[in-house]
Each structure stands twice: as structure tokens, then as C-alpha cells.
Length: 102
Image (cartoon, rainbow, N blue to C red; front, side, top):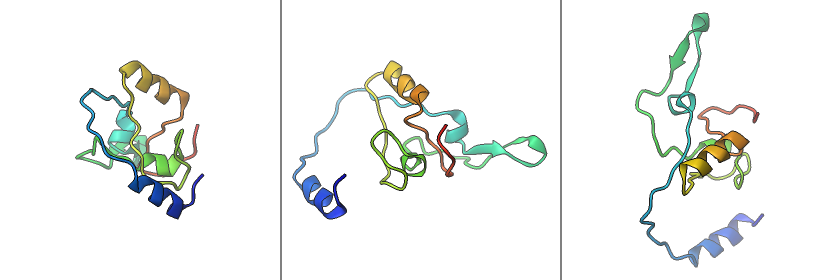
């Protein structure tokens, strides 16, 4: 993995480009609402207005290309089938609170 300075220098040379296509991601309702089991075993929701583009999960639990403690990353796929396969593989866990990978 690159050091932060080397990575920052490399990113300067990348030209942004627009994507005109549909991109897909899979997020569990539990993660989207930051739900957990509360008092008395009843479900509780911590997030009333969820951020559909929340990108902090990978830095908590790691992702395919993001180490635990790494930068925020939004994992997207070109099809629903691919997004679901990535989610089922366990490589894109999304959580607002740190928890061990399954």
C-alpha cells in the first residue's frame, strides 16, 4: 500500500470523469437505519434520516479495497446481481458502529 504522501501525489494526476450510467449498492435495512437490539430485546432505530450515500462503513469493518481504519469508500457495482454477490461475500459490510467481520 502507498504511503499517504505518495498516494496524494498520485491522485493529483487523475482526471475526474462523469459516469452516465446506473450504479447499484446493497445496504441492509439494519445498517441503513443503524438499528440495534435495545432494552427489553426490542429493536431500536438510531438514524431517522438515513444517508443513502454513507461511505464510512468500510473504514470501520474493512472492505475489499479498504483496510480497517482506512479512508471512507463508497462501494458501487454496475448491476444489482454484482452488488448482491459482493454483499453476500462479506467484503462490503456496512455499519455505523464498529463490529467484527463475519
